[in-house]
Image (cartoon, rainbow, N blue to C red; front, side):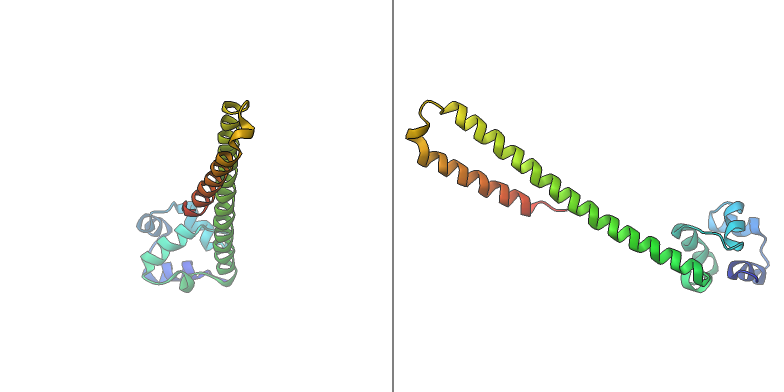
Length: 139
């Protein structure tokens, strides 16, 4: 069975070397694609541009599934990275809170009982800053 890329290359009368040069790929990559081996999305984009068609038109069914799987993996990876960044910001906020409260405690340790209300105001303001900081930072 002849691959679609080989058929399209032959229809245009191009050698593998000529196609590779036009697509900006190596001859080895063209050979692998024509044998039905896996190729990256950028390679498919380059070939589609050379043949003036879409990736779906030049890919075989099994290769299309590979691109879809890679795309889904990239989406899942981006979501996981976003969640990790959000969690990291939360832990940084907690460390900030602990540092501020530690400084406030050690500066007022002897008069802590007389400053309960101001200390609660500092606690509330710090928590408010943590919450605002947590939700306003982009992912």
